[in-house]
Image 1 (cartoon, helix red, strand yellow):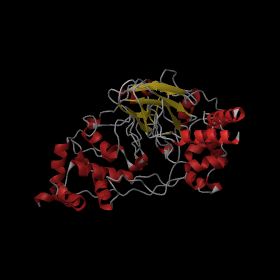
Image 2 (cartoon, one colour):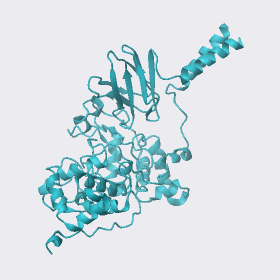
Image 3 (cartoon, chains in turn yellow, orange):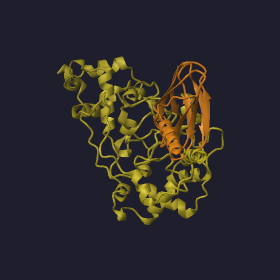
Amino acid sequence: MNVAFRLSVLAMLLLAGSTSGMAEPPRSRDQLKEDFVRPTRVPYPDDDPYDAQKARLGQMLFFEPRLSGSKWISCSSCHNPGLSWGDALPRGLGAGMKPLARRTPTILNLAWADLLMWDGRKTGLEDQAFGPITSPDEMNGTIEELILRINAIPAYQAEFKKVFGAEGVSERAIRLSIATYERTIVSGQAPFDRWISGNESAISDSAKRGFDLFNGKANCAVCHTGWNFTDNGFHDIGMPDKDIGRGAWLKIQSMQQAFKTPTLRDIDRRGPYMHDGSIETLAEVVDHYDRGGTARASLSDEVRPLHLTGTEKHDLLAFLATLTGEDPPVTVPVLPSSQTASR
Amino acid sequence: MRFAFSVYSLALLIAAFSPARADNVTVFQEGKKFSDTEVSVKVGETVTFSNKDPITHNVYSSTPGMSFDLKTQKSGESTTITFDHGGEAEVHCAIHPQMVMKVKVQ
């Protein structure tokens, strides 16, 4: 009985030991590659499912400058498909060409996102749709005025009726349409994806070593996780500016100066970098992480001096270059004329 | 002796698969998920949050009247919180907001 009791205690200890964060052996390159397989379909929420006509309407609205107070700025003014759905500026330009506080993030792969914006203040694409549109600093519109304006265009009336029936042009319909279109914006197949699919010659040996570093010594994959290279999380990576980021919305220490982890898809086409656009090149970004960021209470535990060699930095950059997709050109929709009603 | 061993093994199995309600409930963080989507405790009982991931988490709740912040927990660290009044706390990881669960205090 005593022996049996001791065995049971031992079993409990073994169970406890096996689950207490003990270091696991490093995973092989082939094992790591399993984490980066692209999904086969785009996820749509049950309350805003995919519909081709709705997506087409959303595309029109995305490129529609009449959704801004000035009738001059559209979502696509900052999220330019020719620039991997960003604007290639250090910081966005809003109403009256006023510089904004942060860099314009890409909208690639947001179908897989959770909280949105650099500081996570929007809970989903439907919630986010009117954020920039009604921000006085950005598109400077009002919901009531924009609905009246869109509803005065017969071609839009007809499009909304096709998708939303008697509801027609409404705030909800605009939110759902734009969100549906945005979920269709997915980064194209990149050399990295072909390598993950089994084509060993799709990327260079240097890039393969960079992949190993990305998942190992350089500690990148701890936040830039999975096929979309983001954990959809928030981290203070030690940038020297004073923007408190997520901390404005979640007043706890680790969120002070924390920002959302961006995807790395198309990353070599999306400079300048970081939430404030303060780093010009990817090589300088790698240097930032190699130094370990500004030491402070909120600095992420995952950011620390890396002591990378010059060759290792070169390999990391070679790897990052394999993440750029070969996207087909985006067709810009023909928008209905405001004059149609008076003809 | 074999009988006794079986009894203790059975006890272990029962403990492992019974609903997450006890004097001291432990919730694990593993694979960027909480081990339970919901746990129930009585007023005055505790919940221990134990980080089995190789990365840091920050468990908190901002539910009015039930808010707490366990601050950052590195891999292998555990923190215990006592719930001294009733209610239902929605619990998240601040760093990984897709991690969410509920603690019901009765």
